[in-house]
Length: 132
Image 1 (cartoon, helix red, strand yellow):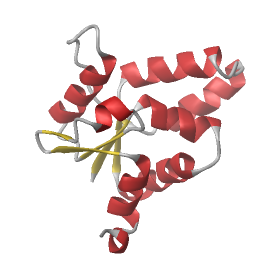
Image 2 (image 1 turned 90 degrees about the vertical axis):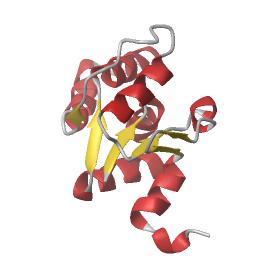
Image 3 (image 1 turned 60 degrees about the vertical axis):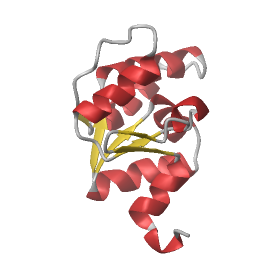
Image 4 (image 1 turned 180 degrees about the horizontal axis):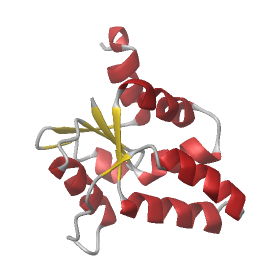
């Protein structure tokens, strides 16, 4: 399955132990994990600005992010990075867009792309027997 992780999922995976960290690690084992330069730019900015990561810590996060399949960013709409990321995921034929952003989650689907929470992604990918 082709899975695009939103910046907030990467941030949670890198910053704190928990579901996003485990999900991200598991995804690399059996799925195509997609990312973009825009996600890396947002993530590295957040890690420095909010968590004051050192250059060594940024390098560790970069090493993990380097494992993704980079897809092309979409330039429009220039004033809405969330819409740009979803459009890029659609253009790259992603199956899932994983985010914690409530506004984006409200979109539910874009074309064949399902927009889901990290927990929903975990169930879809690793525990389908838990679906109701």
